[in-house]
Structures are given as structure tokens and as C-alpha cells.
Image (cartoon, one colour):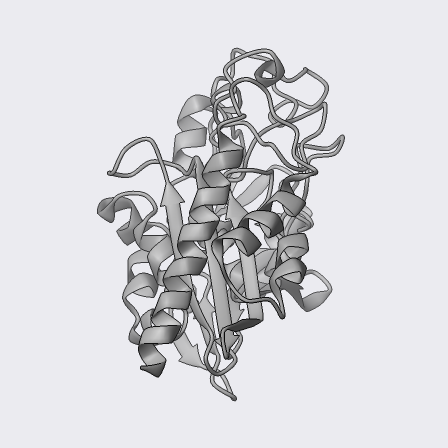
Length: 333
């Protein structure tokens, strides 16, 4: 491991100034992802600025019914929060579907969103990887590809984004609050992560030194419900093969509001807006869901190893929407 310094930040503004001025510095809080990368030689900072003691660990009400979640709120605390469980069920369920209990007690909200891909070649410093070392090549293109992306990939990178929480937050239209050298700005969750294109080393739209300080959950429309469905290789903790965060409202049997976000299929949480537009105004049934999902998947590119993801995402989406629809009917009975 490379020699590095570790210092505790005393306030957010000074932390931002320190990291912005030093290209070899980075933030740490829970450390559940970064420490692994330090051990593997993937991350080689010379300076760690620890923001874990800053007062960013609370969940507070926003005017109008939303919530502001501090960047260092632990995943387990966010999943168990009564308002999150009641109004943002997809968020709570996604957190509980991710990692182990021990990791959820350590991992933070911002750290979860900013974790890096689990592509086996990114994790193996002895192999070429454009995400880890730009210009070196992508071993996953011809190598082990079971977890590769099927939407939005590029010839430079086929890695998928690993966060369950990010997928759920996109479905509730969350906004990320970011502090930078020029002040504070708000980034819709759907604009935080980026597709690889020819710069796969850049996971997000954040500039070096920008610090995530909070995530805001907007109030949800009356009658809308959300859920999270995750498929994985084992029942205990594992990353998603395919996941679906969905929110739904129906009136008189027709869809009036629907949000569908897929995980495990792309370099970022994939908002299925083509499918959403196809469903609004229609009766919710198996054929309508299949047609909507297939319209979204027309852009998919698969290999022999990833072709299984298309039927999996169809079934997972149908399951999530059917569950929400059934709950609507039960609530009206």
C-alpha cells in the first residue's frame, strides 16, 4: 500500500478546499469501498480527508413533505427510518437488499452512490482496464462477461454500476446536494452518474473536490407507491444481475404515473423512460408491460453471456409493477 496521510475535516468548506487543491487527495467516510481499493492497489491517493465526523449524519423533514438525508447517514439507519419505509419503500427495500448487515452499519449514503464497479477486471490490477487505467483496453470485452452492461455500453467499457440505493433514488426523483469550490449545487440523481463513452474512468458528473453533503427526497404524489425487486446469484448479499425500482399510481385501472429504473444493465441506473411513456394512460396488464419493456430494450446489445438479462429484466419489471398494482387494488377495496 502506498504511504498516505489521514486527516479529519473540521468543516465541509475546508474539506472541499483541501481536496480541490490536491489532485492526489480524496474523501473517506465509511470506507467500505475505498479501503478495499487501497488494499488492491486500485486507488492510490496520498491524502485522505475524512468527512465522517462532520455533522452530515441526520435525516430531517423538508417543507412540503420531503426528506433531507445527510451524506454520512448509515445505510442501516436510512433503511429503518419510519418515513422512508412508509413513503419511499423502494429506497428502504433497495438498502436492505444490498450488502450485509455489518456493511450497512458502516456504509454511508454518499459512499453508496459513489461506489465503483465490481467488474472483475477493474478489481484485478494485473489486467487491462480502461476504467482503472485509461487507454489500457477492456478485458471484459473478450473475457468473463456475465455481469456486463447491455444498455449504454461503449467499446471502451462494459461495466455496470453496482449501487442498489442509486437505482431506487432515481425512481423517487431524488436530488443530490453537492458542495464545490464555487458553492453549492443540486444534481438530479439521474444526472449524477454517466455512461462510459470514451471516458469510462469518470463514473459521475462531479468535479474533483466536489463533496456530496446530502440527498433530498422530494414529496411523492398522493397514491403513488414504490418497490424494489433484485435478482442475484445467491439469497445472501450479492450484487444485482438485474434490479428494478418502480413507482406506480393507477386510477380506474389505468396508469397515471409510473417510474421504472433498472440496475445491473448499464454503467448507471437506467431510467426506462420509453417504457414509462408507453404505459401512461394504458390499462396495466401483462401484455402492456411486455410491450413497454420490449420497446425500451430495442436499444440493448447482448452477448452469449449477457442475453439472459433481457428476459430477466422483463420478468422483474412485470413482478414489480404487478405487486404495486395489486396493492393499489387492495388499498381501494
